[in-house]
Amino acid sequence: MNRRNLLATVSAAAFALVIGLPMLGGSNAMADTLADIQQRGKIRIAVDLGSPPFGMTDAQMQPTGSDIESARLVAEALGVELELVQVTGPNRVPALLTGQADIVMASFSVNAERKKVIDFTDAYGVIQIVVAAGSGAGANATKPEDLNGVQVGTTRGSTNDLEATAKLPGAQLTRYDDDATLVTALVSGQVDVMASSPQIMTAVNQRRAADPLTVKIVLKTNPYAIGLRKGEDALKAKLNAVIAENLKNGKLSEIYNRYTGVPLPAILPKT
Image 1 (cartoon, one colour):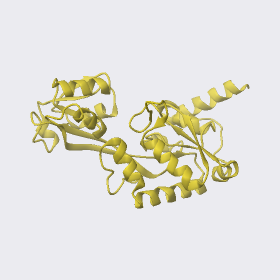
Image 2 (tube, one colour):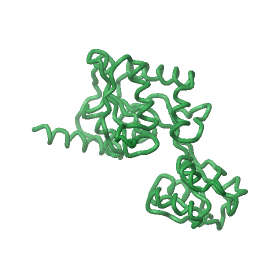
Image 3 (cartoon, rainbow, N blue to C red):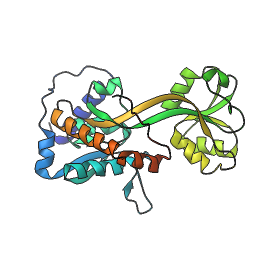
Image 4 (cartoon, rainbow, N blue to C red):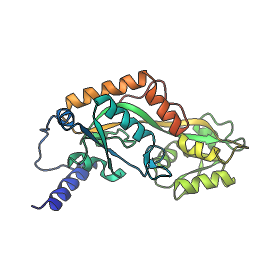
């Protein structure tokens, strides 16, 4: 079997596991990745540069974002060089299982399906789904029932859409094709209430200073963490220690706030 076919086979197997399908054969036996990292003097961290503000490129086309800065903290704590491996959402798990990366730091939300395939450290950040409104409709909302009959904008097919559909049954959901279109609709006043992330709210408020949105209801808080292969107990323990130290000294909180525009919760959800 040539290399291309081998990678395709492993990627397909990883995808099957992610969606809960069984995979024939295989082994959970893993090498000591922490020892490998220390021996080579480099850690390969997978990041998604198409997911602002967590991962993106700046005006000089250099990687930036909260995940990039957090990855630098990890490499510094381990005393090794950082190599960024660019991935997209769908190939984060295959990048681990094919050995392209040692760990993944790409706003990697923790869920039960992913935990069947890979392991996660403690959380180092969160992605919230919130309802935010200006001074008009929805201004006094404190619970889902207060939005009955109210037009609420969200992004079609996103996790925000799924949560809003499930938890705001009485709202009139207006679905936009992408986040950029949702932001434009909120800035122009086509819709005054949103079900999305605080980061989207911040983007809106940068262009809607006269009537900024504020968070009314938190629909869900998803922790995100570092993804790593199963069986890597030494690496997981070391990464958890790095996360704990940088939460304690405030470095992770400062990075999160600087890039997302909202504070990191004082207590992060368990993974």
